[in-house]
Amino acid sequence: MTRRGFVRTGSALLLVATFLIAGCAHRTGANVAFPAEAQWNGRLALKVQSDPIQAFSADFELGGSPQNGLLVFFTPLGTTAARLQWAPGVATLVADGETRQFDSLAALAQQATGAELPVRALFDWLNGQATEVPGWTVDLSRLDQGRLQAARTAGDLPAVELRIVLQR
Image (cartoon, rainbow, N blue to C red; front, top):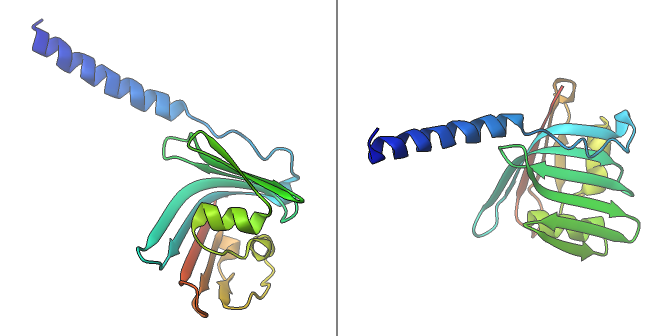
């Protein structure tokens, strides 16, 4: 085998091995500390109409409540991209090998997403309660199909669109 053929074969084997390893990637089960009715997973998409527009989409696992919880975002290969954890008086963001502390879940969400999000109401929405938040509209009409949409269009802040598809 020539050197060029060996390099091509080696590159192809490396590519196949990468896909096989990625196929073995699995979720952490990070939310096992919370009861089943306080756990959700699926795909989340967030679009903030700022300048420039910010868009984010990832698989997620969420567990807990607005007072005490854990939210983990995953890369397409299934590894952890970011971990957000909160309890009364403290919220932590772990991403890119860096840990950052915040005073509240609201401040953490602002930093992680670039938008003020109604995190407390989000837990109600996921439980099928259409809690009203000034400036926000929520569509729970397809929640039984695992789909939730919410948007902020009013006010001085940039418009935000949040879409969640829950895994069944």
